[in-house]
Length: 67
Image 1 (tube, one colour):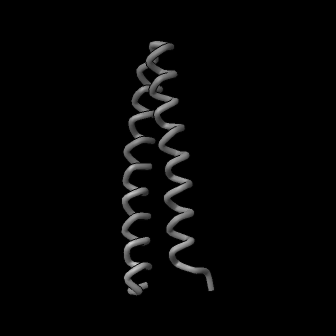
Image 2: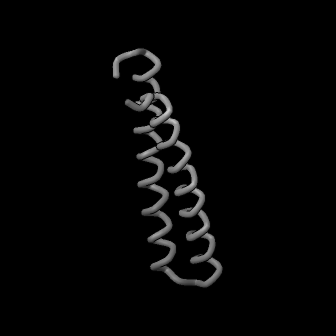
């Protein structure tokens, strides 16, 4: 069985990359003047931020031994 702490760290790292992609899409949409890209970027950032929160919550639970 996988270590819950390493799985939580993997979630955090993956979603940090998603956050960077979302910010890149926002910048790209701003430069190109395309509103749909800006909206997509904000959606990606919001989802990635929420998943980072879930990863941090899982990491805390794993360190407390409650998983």
